[in-house]
Length: 304
Image 1 (cartoon, one colour):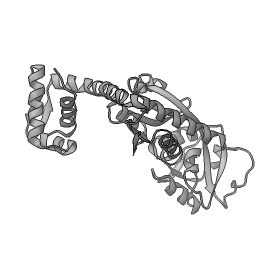
Image 2 (tube, one colour; image 1 turned 135 degrees about the vertical axis):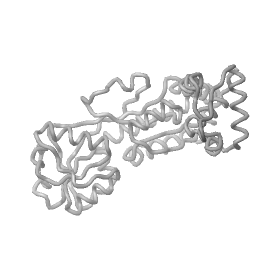
Image 3 (cartoon, helix red, strand yellow; image 1 turned 45 degrees about the vertical axis):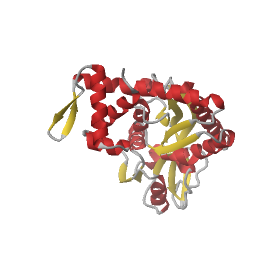
Image 4 (cartoon, helix red, strand yellow; image 1 turned 60 degrees about the vertical axis):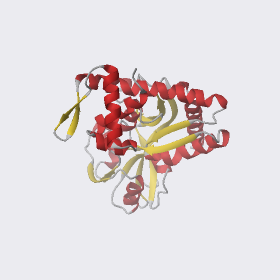
C-alpha cells in the first residue's frame, strides 16, 4: 500500500536531488528519508531511485509515481480538510499564493472577512507571479492561486483543468510624471502618443504585454529601466525618468507621488481570477476563501 507520507518524501527527494536535502526540506533526518524510501520501494515492488554521483535520480517507475503524486496528495488533502471542516471550519487550513498587487489590495480585505467569519480557519500567504503560481497549485504546493491573463492573449485553455473563480477585470493605465505634457489630459490617450518616451517596464509578463501593445500601435518602446517592484516603477516615473503602463490594481496598491495616471486607448485589460484544483474546490475552507476573494474583487471594482 502506498502511503501519502512516502509520496511527499519521494517528491522532496526528486526536487532536491538527495536524501539529506530532502530531510532538511521536510524537517527530518537523512536516515529517516532513506528508511521511508526503502519502505515505498518495498510497497511498489521496484526501485524508484538510483544514485548517480552525489545525487539521486528517478527511475522510470519513480518518474511515473512523482507525476501522479501531486494529484494523489491534493485528493488526500481535500479529504482531510473536508472531514476537519465538518465542525464548522474550526480546523480549516488554506495555502494561498498571490501576485504582489493582489496581495496588497484583494487579499487583505478577503482574509480579514474570512477571519471574522471563521476564526479557526488558518490561511498562509506566499507571493508568486503567474505562470509560477499556477504551477505551484498544480504541483500541490498551494490550495488557491491568484492569477491573471490578458484579454485576447494566446493560451486561454491553460486553465481548463482548474476551477476558475473570476474576481475582477483590471485595465492598464499609463503613468506619467506630474509635469508631463499629457498629465492633465481629459479623456483617453492613444499609446502611440508615448512612442518617443523613455519607458519603465514592470514584471516580465506585463513587460511582454507592453511590448505587444506598443508594437500593435506601430512602435517598439525604448525600455531604459525594468523592475518587478511596482513602487520602484512609480518612483522612477515620479522622478521624471520615463513613463510606464501598469495595471490599475498595481497603481492602487501604491501611492503614486509625483506621477499621474492617464487612460489609454485602445483599452487593454487583464482578467484577475482565483484558481484551485477540482478536488480542493469541495473543501469548505477553500470555498470560503474563494467566496471572500470574489467579494473583495467586487468591492474593488465598485470603488473605481
